[in-house]
Length: 235
Image (tube, rainbow, N blue to C red; front, side):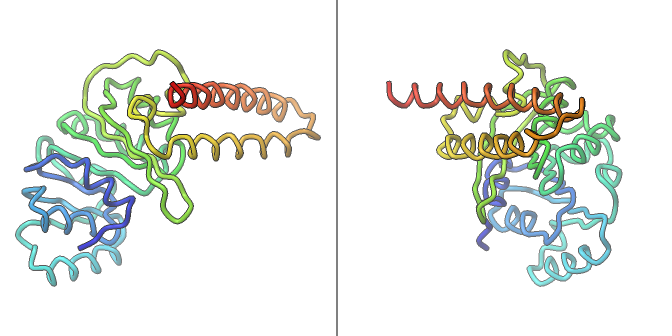
């Protein structure tokens, strides 16, 4: 089967011969792909929606993968046992929700080796949580699909030091890897911030002024990263 660009990038981070849990599996495309390509030995596909799981169950039966894909109804990591899996995929939801899923079940979380996370929003908050809770971000990738950017994080348990707070907002690995669409991604983020700043120009409340100051600083920091990338490309 052929995956979308986003799902393919997620699947590409899954190490060979692993036992994987796909939390919030939705259509079940990633689990089926991982079995078809002999990347994973076994998959636990979970979702909080009964309707979604019924569709996935039928899909798995049609593929005759019942012995390889275990489908479970439940919220977050609660359907797993400690050391039952070595790799977890949590994709297609907000960064704060992913953070809460990881934080709610620390015993299960700490028994997992590989974390493949794809937040739709609040990626900076998720990165900060990872750094603050003894995770090491091993790699990252940007994907653009249907005019939307997606950030995919591959992390393991470990300790790493953040030299600059801007790396919460823009993953350091994206910069080190010279991700091919990083420049375009930065341009988009700066454009969004500048649009919000224009909307805040005529607002004089204390809260709006604080927000404006915060966004000006963020825009400045992003432009510094942008200039560094441009400088490195020209050298």
